Length: 122
Image (cartoon, rainbow, N blue to C red; front, top):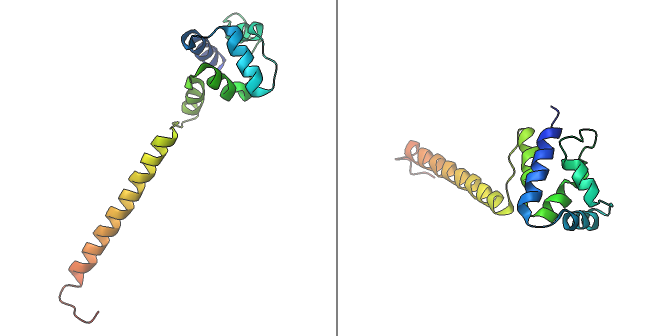
């Protein structure tokens, strides 16, 4: 369960794809996390040869915000057996649950009506 290579790869990929320089990303992470992160630090965190330099998980959210890429958070969740969803997906999930509750309630009402057919003293 050593995820350091995976995390290093996800970091490097997000940095490559975001369109910002490492210096810009480091500055944003520093601002967002109130922790000094430098371009050199980012280089060490992502270098395959620097296995002694590990990415601190407390910077995950700041990194994702700075790069506009939530792959790191999704990856960590999935490794733990979870799926991440956004706020809209959460509402859709809630709607689906409420729909199922309503459907089951309607089925129960229909079954009771069938059993009580012909009973007039309600």
